[in-house]
Image (cartoon, rainbow, N blue to C red; front, side, top):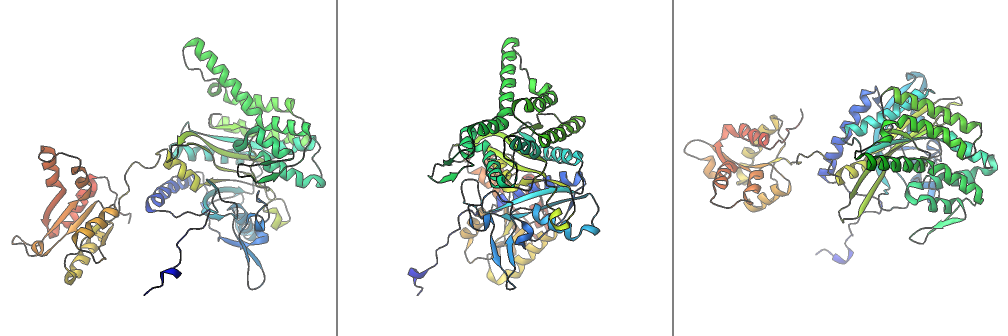
Length: 531
């Protein structure tokens, strides 16, 4: 007998999730829509491995409170340190540098895959998650950044999220200009600037008060953990908080004016939609009047103005793409424009709690990342979609394909001595590009039907000795499980019930098996397998 006291406990590590067939299918469909947009823009696929040399990935993660600074690392037998990739951008930089002479420049590519973070797990924070990136390497033009923003907007449109997202844009040079102007320049302040950067990146989650605490002595979270702050002076904190909150202040004023005009006229008035580009330009003009800047900051504002002009020329409204100083991005390697896609959806989770989706993707310009390998300037810009997060958001708001996800057709087994006959049926169905399987368990009829139900099979194929030896010739029974489920909701004896009962179970000649199954699948909109 097995010693149950020593049995291994089946458990999933924190920060990781298993994925079921329905989630995998919906994610696959979402990825194909994203891929179509990326390829429409002329980007081509490339794959890099999940493991890289640790020094090739660099130390750019925002979480330095974890072992190996947020990276899963191990030492090879030749004493070289290797790490699981924490994003898809750093491996791309290595790939481009290693194949620089052979690649066309600018080099436009997209990648998808799993990335890994050695971070403290929490709601919505996983140690393994999927990203889908697109990057242009070798162009310093703001047109490359503008195109990335446009592509991000088009991707959200393709996913059916029109009016429910915004691509927010900022520029690291502007923030650098503010920090330099308030006395945070120089190598001696490098660590404090990094702390400031990470504090500002939490603005959407913590708000002004939380960010101000992190810019000051520090902040204690709900769990009691204390995060040491940047220890800035009061005026420095005020300038930085004003910088990241100025956009929300102006947008609130616009919404108040819209509400006033709507109340007066009795009609909806959308000032922001009508003058979005003008309001963007106004914000870029007002910003240096509100917070101190130096030359670097003005260079960033000029780049943002170019980006806004290009997006406006391509007929993208500020409802889709807009300037927002609160966008910081936590990774250290960004050097210019940064962007973030935020979902504006309001919904509830499975427990009825309100859910704020926030960012589902982002990116920016990283002119120094490839240069680490080359020793020469190599401009680059890119965008990454958090696939797992976006898929979860779409699922919560019922944005998945409304069509039910069905399993395979199940061929039941009534006689173990006739396995070859049942296998022949399965082969015929598969030859017609129909997903099918033969029941391989040991159960009799009822367990087989329960199995088909759990597999969400649209129909089952049945052939016992009576059907095999039918006087009219060999027959099969094809049972429509979808109609069968509908029957349970109807009153017995009614005309509709009797009609569906006849349709739900059909006895047909053996040579009509494939045709009959195809008719049932077509009735319920079940797609056959792609050849």
